[in-house]
Each structure stands twice: as structure tokens, then as C-alpha cells.
Image 1 (cartoon, rainbow, N blue to C red):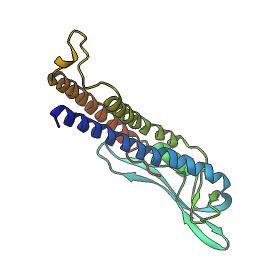
Image 2 (image 1 turned 180 degrees about the vertical axis):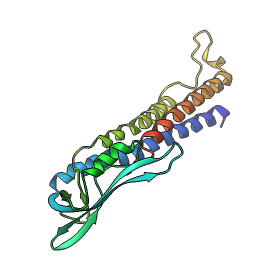
Image 3 (image 1 turned 45 degrees about the vertical axis):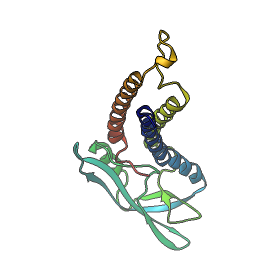
Image 4 (image 1 turned 30 degrees about the horizontal axis):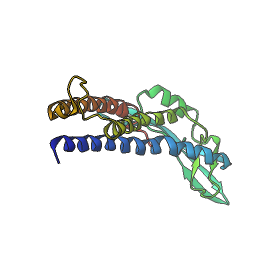
Length: 208
């Protein structure tokens, strides 16, 4: 196997990893929360009482981030349950004031309504509809698209052949191929760094 073939398969592996990361994160932060939102339409509205509410502080490389934690209790068939799930996707971010405003709306002892999974009463949520945080699920599509596009470019185009019409095909040497591979690899690496920065800034702390 020549060096250009090795470079080709290495580049294919590079884009495959990008594709798999995009697919996995899109499922976790996009498909899964939306699926939960859909099924939660059948969940049962249940009276609940706020046990405690607070703004939690999380340390990070770029400074502290904050999240809302609301613990509430509810009863199903005479048995008490507790949950702190507010939405199907949540996390921490900068901006203490906004989190504090949310917490102020849920003082301990307040009577609220939660939605309980009739098939598993341990599972409950306060907001069962679409929330702004779900929009973050779109970001992994960028990774998915770059990976899929890169794999298509590697396997379905003549990307590793010189296309200078002034030279016959038999004179297309490996030098141009190596330059093309090197240039593509550098461009792809730059894209990864750019998207990684966005990823860490937006959903690095998000969880479902």
C-alpha cells in the first residue's frame, strides 16, 4: 500500500470520528430530549410541593457557571417520590441573575404541578414541552455534516488525483496528492478546533 493510500485511509478515519461524535451527541442532545417531549404528552399532571430550590455554582476554566436546582415531592398511589428534573435537557451556564429569578419563582412549600410517567412514577418533570435549551441539539449537526461530507469527498470524488488538464493522467505524481492531503488535513484540523470551542462554550456542561 503506497503512502497516498495510507493518507487516504487516515483522512477517512479522521472524518469517521468526526461523524460518529456528531451522531452520538446529536442523539443525546437532540433526538433523545425531543423524543421525551413527545412521549411526555401522555404523562399525568400531578400535584407537587417544592422541597427546596437553589442556584448551584460550578467551577470552570473560564469562570463559574450556574444551574437551577428545584427539588419537589409528589405522590403516586399513596407513595411519595422526589425529583429535581425541571426539563428534559438542562445544564449550567454563566449568568447568575437569570437563574436566581427562576429559583425565586419556586420557594419551598409552594404548590406546583409536575408531570409523571404513568409507567414509571420515579420519572417526573416540571416542563414537559419544548424548552430553549433544546435548540443546542442543532449544534452537533455541524459535526455530523462535516464528517459525512468529508467521507463523501474521500470515497466518491477523485480527490487524490491531480486534475491539471495540461498533464496526462499517467504523469500525475504523488507529490500533488501529498500536498492535497496535507492541505485538507490542515483545513479539517482548523475546523475541529473552531467547532470544539463552540461545543465547549455552549453544551459542554449540558446534560439530559
